[in-house]
Length: 481
Image 1 (cartoon, helix red, strand yellow):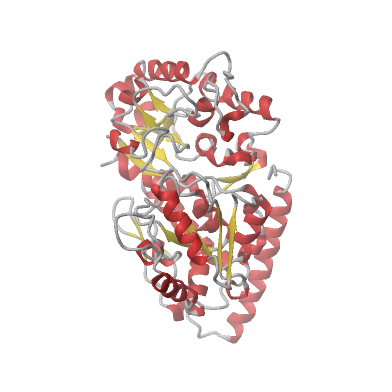
Image 2: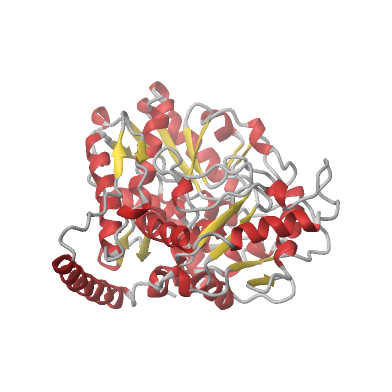
C-alpha cells in the first residue's frame, strides 16, 4: 500500500484517539486525585547516552493514555537531540548515485521501492528514508565548516539491484542484467570513490563521514561476479575504512562468506529494518495484550530442503519446538506463504518469536515492535539498535537459545524435549501484569523504530517517525569516539 492515501485517515484516527484519551484521563483524574502520575521517562546521563529509569509497576497507572506514554519518550529523544549540538552536512551526489536509481526501479516495477515488499525488497529502503528525512531535519547545516558529521546519500541496495549482471535469486531476478542510466554497480562505486576523494572534508576527516547501507550484503573488498554484490566494494572498501556505516546487521555476511564482517575494520552502527507499511497505520497494535490470541506467533521457512547456514538451522529447531504448543501459531512459509497472515499474526499475538536467520538480526523484530507484539528475541549474538539509548529488557524478552537447543557443538542434534518444554512454559506463564508492562513500554518506543509513513520524497505526503532522530543520536556517539 502506498501509505500516502491513508495519511489523512491516520491523522483523523490519531486526533480522535487524542480526544478520547484526554476525556478518559480527565474522568479518572477527578476520581483518583491521589493517584501517582506516570514517571516512565528517559533519564539523560552524559554525552549522548540515554538510560531508561526503572519504573515500578505500581507507578504505571492503568488510566494513563498510551499516547501520553509515547509523548514522554519521543519528547525525551527530541530534547536530547537538541542538547547534543549535532550538525550534519549532506553531500549532493551525482543523480546516478541515488535519484536516478529510484526512477529506474519504478520504471521497471511500476511502484516505489519503499512500497514494494515483494521478495522483501521494500525492507531495504532505509537509505532512502534516512537521506530524505535528513534533508528536512533541523540539525542540517549547509556550511561544511559547522558540520560535525557528513552524510553520504548513496542508495546502495538499488545500486546492487541494477548490478548489470544476471541472477537467479528471486529478489533480483526481475532486474536481470539491467543497468541504470547506463551504469552498473561497480561503475557507480568507482564514481562515488572519485567524488569523495575530491572532497576536502573527506580527505581531512574521513572519520566524521557516515553512509547508510540498508542491505545485508554490506562490504567486500573484491567484487563478486554474481548478483547480489556487496554495496561497499572495490576501491570504496578501502576508502571508507575510517568512516561509519549504518547497517542492519553488524555481523554481516556475503554470498561466499558467512563471516564477511570480520574483514571489515571500520565502525558500524546498527539501525532498524524498514517495517512493513501495512503495520504502520493499524490501530490494533494498541489492543490490550491480555485479549490477544494466540500467545506465540512465528512465520518463516522451517522446512527448506537445503539448509545453508547454522543460523537458519537453529531457527528451524526453535520454531519446531513451538509447533505443537496449543497457544502458538507457527507458519512454515516454505509450504504456505501469505503476507496478510503474517501481518495479522503480528497484530493479534502477544509474543512474537524472533529467532536468527542467515545473520543474528531479522526484520521480523522490527515488524513485531511496530505491530505491538512483544518480541521474544532468540538470538544470542544480536546487535540491537539504540542499545545505548534504550533498555531493551523493558519492552522485550530475551531467553537463551540454549534452552531450546540440545547441548553440544552441532545444531543438528535433536531437541531436548523436556528442556524446551520447560522454557516454553516459562514464557507462556509470564504474569499478566508483566505482559501489560512490556506492552505499554513497547508503545513508548514504537515510533523510534518507524522511519515514516507515506512517500519520503514528498514532504506533503510524508509523516515522519522518530527512527532518524534515534539514529542521529546513536551515530553521533560513535563519530565522537
